[in-house]
Amino acid sequence: MEILTKIESIEPAIRQAGEIMLKYLDQDKQIEHKEAVNLLTRADVECEQLLVDFLKSNFPDDGILAEEGHQYPSQSGFTWVIDPVDGTTSYAHGFPQFAVSVGLVNDNNESIGGVVYNPYYKEIFQAAKGHGASLNSKPIRVSNVPSLSVALLGTGFPYNRRERMPLLMRRLATILHNVHDVRRTGSAALDICYVACGRTDGYFEEGLKPWDTAAALLILEEAGGKASKFDGAKADIFFPELCVSNSTIHAELINLLKDAHLREII
Image (cartoon, rainbow, N blue to C red; front, side):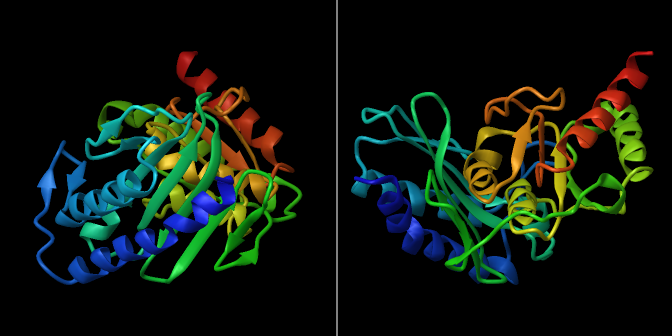
């Protein structure tokens, strides 16, 4: 089956997962603490089960890697990477920056398809390798902002931020001094998609997991964006650092991230 067809076929299930999220948004979310600042809600559990059941029924040979524990090896060369509620903390507080994220990767762990859906705003980002990226079925492209000084960036903080505070604050201060401004949504998938559609011009974060980025990275690349590790090396969904941009400002942004890291060492 063509990748685009596979991606399009999962949209109804993703929209169903979004309805589950909205159903519990103003109800008791049955919040649990996986770690001090890492939350789990009933929506995480129910959305993941819905998506896993759909994928196992429709693509039984495909692998699955999901945030809340479902893992099945691939027999087909394809693996679905699922974050049932990306931005759980935002969701738990009723802050409407959360999303269902489902990415498709090949045996080389390269993203080849992805869907990111914010049910609150009814925004569905989609891409399949070689077919471009879209928002609600309309093509999207990254911004043409030419330099960091006029760029709006997104960022996030890792769950172990208390241990990493000096570097995180130094990095943020370095960036803030050189850009127009910085925003934080709490959802890595949405942050990357916002770069893809030109709402922001770049994004950087550490402490990421594959389910945070597998879908959105392909959406970004198909929209003309660039992604890498903080040192400029090729992005990897299994590596915790990620820097993305509209491509034009990428070298500038990487240099600032390197500068902040060097200051910590010195």
